Image (cartoon, rainbow, N blue to C red; front, side):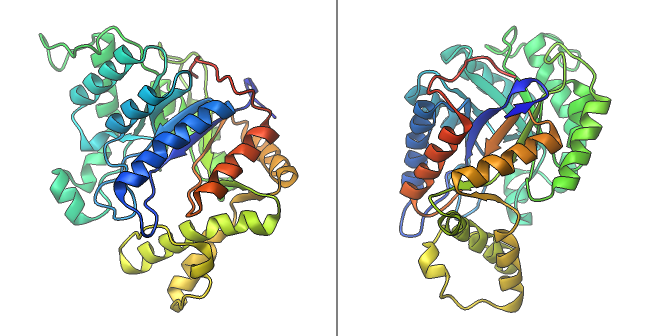
Length: 343
């Protein structure tokens, strides 16, 4: 598969999903183990996410978890998908990534998003509100200034050890995020694969408005989404069931539960709205056998010109999930020796 810049890279984003009957500690250790497997399989980068107050997600401190992942691996790039910048002061974020880059030079990515807390209660606990996301462009500019030494807003203050380091920044696009990434001249991460028309429109705006910067000379697009690969199309579809059910429960009951086994979910009663969300959650993802997924991903790349595919699959069965990544690595022709270059 080829994107606008040549061969398409494949990477992994793991959200440290808690399994039914398991603990948050087990979910975090599973993330570190998966990172080692991703490195051995040849994936380009391994990213972790930020969620607060969500029962089914253990990944609440992405830079801390990224440090554990980087310490447990040797070559694969490690980063965040992402740190939600409105939740933090830019100087603190710069310092955290400066520490990571100092400890693991040439391997750290700084993925940045503009979402705020999941609920009003979480936002209040974080000390932020929905309106804080409106100044994402300003927060982003301040953050990058701590690395470049542009401290106009804070004369006489230096972020150590961040100043002078170059940690590749990526913007996770939601809403106007693509336009912000283009104006700042930064790589773009955009999803999801189910809404191809909206995806292509955001990427088109990004490429049209991109202004080269000291961080990136040309546009770079990472397309994120769920990809499930198995021996049969039916087996691949079963991998999607636990996450679809958890999302349906979240949308109808306000709680995002731990992942349950697919076999048990099939027999559970669901209300009309819950069933509607559940069935919608199963549709549109890239899944199937290796041959089917290869063809569907090639179509995604043709439509979007993606330079990289970031796979975010979650499911209850850890062995089946790992088998899916192994099959994906095989169909993508990964070599087991990821490059250390960034975008």
